[in-house]
Every structure is written in structure tokens, then in C-alpha cells.
Image (tube, rainbow, N blue to C red; front, side, top):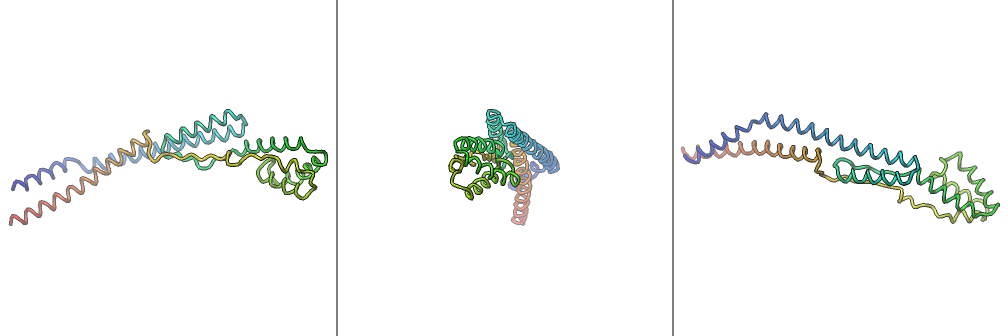
Length: 211
């Protein structure tokens, strides 16, 4: 008899936790979680655009600052994976500088070969892009050996212009805390459902045993 009363009291306590209260709270937390995750992603997108804008402007110090800001933000907020970022404009500028430095050391015949290669490749590709540089090398290879200065020019390493920052699985910000609270509420809902099922089974077993 005592066990029956104890089970009934436990069921009564669980019934005090209204399921519709928990469901309503869960819906609110889901909306808040989605909103804060979206805001995190928007913040990352703005900083990513700032990096690309600095790349176009050509200010190396500003590029470094924007990249550092993006990396710091992405590492501190969930849902902020940047995806691949390539500093195309800075690479083009560095390639141009390397080729110009090489051209200044070539003789007149070599400069003529450079001009011919440039005339062939410039209409086909964006000036100083990777494809343009490859085209120039291919055209110079078809010409005389007087282009040795250009062919031995030290090109910048493309990997130095690639960035890709990953976000943490969880972060202690508004998005992270609302997601954590959402998990707690879901656990409470499941716990209430499972608890009521177990208590009802126990009560039925005790009723049968009493017969």
C-alpha cells in the first residue's frame, strides 16, 4: 500500500510540470537559437566581405587586420565557418611585382619575347591572374631561350593566399546558451514522458500483485 501511495505522489508531482508549458518554452528557445545562430553567421559574412574589400584596396596592413578579426570572430562563435577565402587581388599584385622584377633583368630580346607573350595572353585572361601567368610561361617556352630571366622568376606560393577558418561546435555566446537551454528543455520533456510511463507501469504491476 505504501508503495502505491508513493507512486501516486510521484505521478502527482510530475503532473505539476505542465507539458504545454514545456512545449511553449521549447518553441521560444528554438526561435531564439535559430535567430542567434543566424546573427553569428551574418557577423562572419560581414567580416569576410571586409577581408575581400581590403584585398581589393591593396593595403597589406588592413588585409592582415581584417583577416585577424575574421579569425578571432570565427573561432569564438558557432555557425561561423568561413569557407575558402582566396586573396586573388593581392596574389595578382605580387605576381606582377615578381614578373616586373624579372623583366628588368632581361635583355632587349627577352623583353621583346615578354611583349609577344603578353600580347597573346592578355586578351584571353585577366591580367596577372593565375591563368594569365601560366599562359605567359607557355608562350615564352615557344619562343627563344632569351626569356630565361622570366622563366626563373620566383612566383609567390598560392597557399599563402588561401584562408579557411572553422567555428567551434559550441561557443559561450547567446547562440550557445540558448541551444544549451533548448537541450535542457527537451531532456525535461522526454524525462516527464518516460517518467509517467514508468510510474504507470509500476502502478499497474502493484495493482495486479494486490489482487
